[in-house]
Image 1 (cartoon, rainbow, N blue to C red):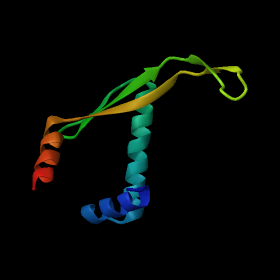
Image 2: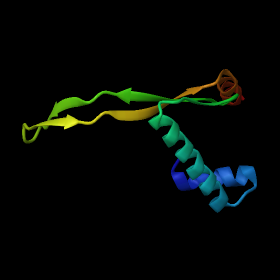
Image 3: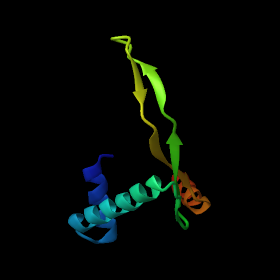
Image 4: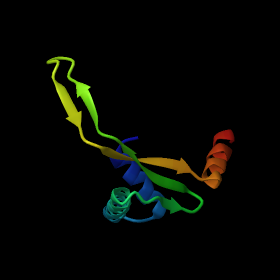
Amino acid sequence: MDNKTFIQRLSKNLGDDSHRVTSMLDAFANVLRGAATTMTDVAIPSFGTFSPVKADEEIVTDRVTGRKMLLPPQITVQFTPAAMLRKKLSESHEE
């Protein structure tokens, strides 16, 4: 599902216009970004936890040129679903 379809479905389910839903998603992304920079988890009850994971810097070799490059450290966000979300998804899958 692409971003546009996701926003359309979410706005329909929420009964809100797509511009407002887009601004809420942008605000949520900003909260996650801020939490990731401070290496803080964001837990949403009954939904799950977003946890930042830091990958160390590494030296890689370019396959084409053979040059070595230093990749900077990188922070990614890992999502762990809550038990309630897993249960709801498995119930909807069984129906």
